[in-house]
Length: 142
Image (cartoon, rainbow, N blue to C red):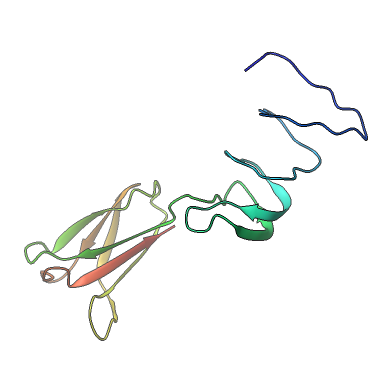
């Protein structure tokens, strides 16, 4: 990155092929944004890129606590016919997770079991019996 600065006076326009800001941008960004945006925007509109929808229209506030393309949930079929305590690696990076287990067939009802948040990336599901192979489905979300 060249060590230069471009000064913009009020009322002028500038085009950047790249821009790194280590403090604050006051004003607006129009066009497309590729890369990372950290911080707070009071209003965002236009196109926001996601893996599943590259032209997702956005008209909401974007804050540092909300980031696109970041995993916020994990799902898996669980049960192997041998273990009553089943470790599940969710890799969400926090112990502040919601855990729901439901039957993987009719009537698809919620199953009660103990959930121990053993690390920031793993939950142990403890059943009073040994679930059969893929008997249940777990949803773990932030």
